[in-house]
Image (cartoon, rainbow over all chains, first blue to last red; front, side, top):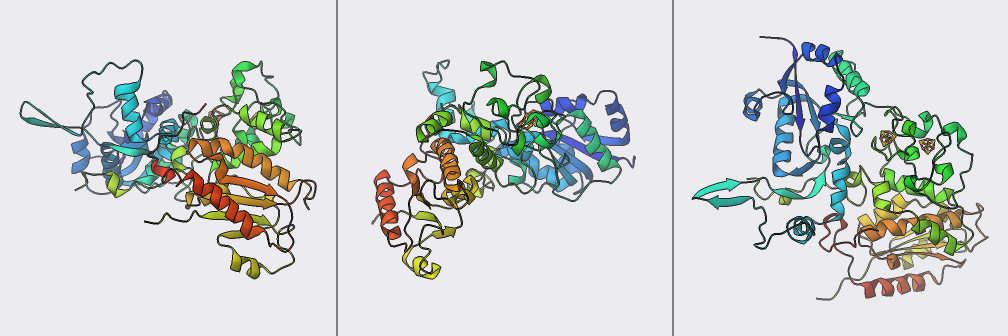
Length: 330
Length: 143
Ligand code: SF4
Ligand code: SF4
């Protein structure tokens, strides 16, 4: 028997990047692995879900969950982890806010199935085969998880104790979070384990930002040779820094790419996309209404800018998982 | 079954709209009316929240151009609204459902009429494409 704290790492609708960032702690991970008892980590270790089912409630000290919730399997696993864990950490932009997959919420589930199994130009499916939750093959019943109407952040499905944003979270923040957990220095429940400032407040280009930014034309980053020393917004390039939590280490800014918002909103902001839109509007410098329309048209893919990582928690889109979405809940 | 009367939420700036009469008097004539000080105060968050809570249309009454008590709050509002149209479109909400009207009416007598006109416009569009959170109707593919 060991008295090490039990830690479980689980992926739901995930690309694997969040697991990779844990591996990227490099040799320091060995220290972490030595000080905890890892009971689940599907991407790296061979443990089975039924081992978790057999554990006592609250037996896991820390449950780390990455990825979004889109189907009944994700929801079931999330609920199991909640039941067995004392502390749940939503890890990465998908678990925290729904992440990039959340942009799928601009389409209905039917639309997505139609496109993927019928209409996409690369699809040849004359029989119209489409996955079903239950299929009979040779007298046996096969089942698949049910896809929900929309993508959900983890806290739409279970109670979440802490949030570690990022796409993925940088290794130094992962290490900081795990250390805080091991040393019992985690902040108040519900906190984000990243900075409490906006990215602009920590951005090295902030000093170059004029008091009043006046945008007369919006350009896309690939269309111009951006000045690597000047604030992107002052160059007419959309940068989500004003509405995004800091803590990433300015990794995009440092390679001359504007912020896309993967650290999500700052405390008390209800909808960071709407907030950013408000700020952007005030920077627009147009002669008249026609000029204003023209600049507005230059914002290509508005939703992709405003809600790249956060559509499922936006004002218009957010909703907790409805029980009627889960048809086979009983 | 009779079609439901469209719900219009109206924000109006107190400086140009109905400042000669009491708020109670205007409120008695208008449903879902929100008096504010300066349209520059209205954030996209407020407009989206109105739609989220079931508004079929949002009408914003601001002061005439050049007449804002805070210099350019009405122009700020216009900029926000123009950008917000792109967002609404993605949710399948037609442009006509959000309108900024700049003008002045100290007694607020024309407000019911302006709301009625907006109601008529919105009625012609038909019901809003369902609850935006579970859009059945496919929104146009964004540009
Ligand atoms: S807008 Fe972007 S480039 Fe400008 S200061 Fe903020 S984070 Fe830096
Ligand atoms: S600059 Fe923005 S998008 Fe890039 S890593 Fe930081 S928070 Fe994420």
